[in-house]
Image 1 (spheres, each protein chain N blue to C red):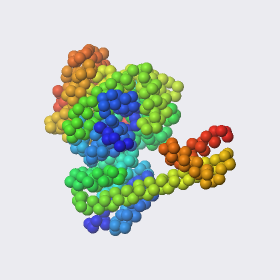
Image 2: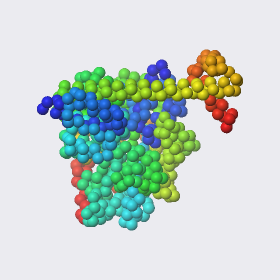
Image 3: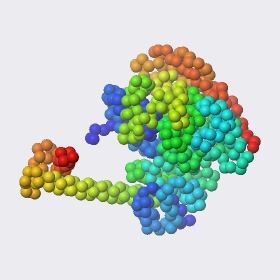
Image 4: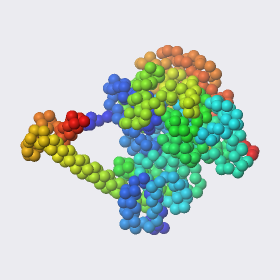
Length: 413
Length: 196
């Protein structure tokens, strides 16, 4: 190929790269006159390094990564912005078959309800401690990930200290099912299709899902190298428009079979497409032969799923402070907030007739039912967006929020 | 501490590449070199050898796990990416181009570790070149075998001499603007189908 790409974009082979991959594979980028080079990357560290040296211009990435990069928390920290979100939800917590059985004995009742399962898990943790067994070990995909922060949030809200009562380790998602089968971990929080893969392997069962811990919560974003974004505003706008059209296409149930086939191709996820369908449809195979339909399991377009809410950025920041990754300071909070760029989202999409939220931030967890909110162009329905414990995050009250979350639970055996 | 006393950990799933890196380090006078291929259990090794420098394949999917260890572990001095000093942009790009990433314990002077990175980069590049040449040689050999099979088919089915069979392949390839090996491949496949 002699033609130079207009934009070089990295992705990690996961279901939630769907919007990016279909934007290219279905020709939405070409319609915008963009030649896009997609690079598959084996690790988030690899994505970050290539962005830092200019081998990539943008990438599908974990929502906390641009914040962590701008706060200088990586061994190598490029300057990144997130002008677009790649969907809401999409993760699950899968536990070993043995732990699933124990949770059921302790009252989990085969539900995905995060409160009920969490309280059974707390009992299991206390029992193990009483028996002198080592703490349960959970895998997450990355330190600065929605997975790590939602798992920790859930555990802590259930009265389990994620640092003392259990052990959390990092593993690449494709290794999770085997690690669970071999007993190297007792559970994991990862995106699809790795929960479905673990269930089909007979290694475990899905205990709860991200949508039950915090409904309509952020997961991946498009991270863009700031220097590239500043030098190429027209290409960035065109790319965001293509991504937005792809997000609408991905959201159509009639397109899910085709999307699964596209994503499963060797040059993208290189997986059996049937592994991808539960995550796309929300009909989750939680245990062999048992399917539970999950509302809003993974949203690519509805409920402003592509809008980069600065309140999402600030919530991730509050969790980085909570778990000791960075110190709370007004300057750090500003860096975190401004890592997300709703202004660029609006600039790119204003001509498309897309609903554009008027606000940059919202109170998270406040909507108990679907609610029509003010937006330019057309009406926009948001929510429900509740945290499972009825918790609310008001970005205007971040100091009080950070203070309050510092009190950690204590489990007595 | 002399440079030779630096403790260096090489993590590479490719045994041959790991070996050539290790040889390079030893040839440069480094004596405290540890090589691991498996990432499992690497936490204990890091604790035991307490490396000043870690060299790892950029494409290794376990880098995220390795970096999480730096964040969590109190026993490991916090390492930083070798690339963190952006003064030598060319060196950083060369490393990433070659597929090498490296971490150094914070505070170690750049000039002490740069020769290690340079050596790793050149060895990684040498390895890639070697792998590419091997692959080319392998496909060259396969092409020759396929052409021989196609010639044999033509000699048998058309009663041609070996030379005439080769000429026919070459003319067809030229007319279709394709490689002889591709024409031979098609012919062998077609013959296989007709036989089957």
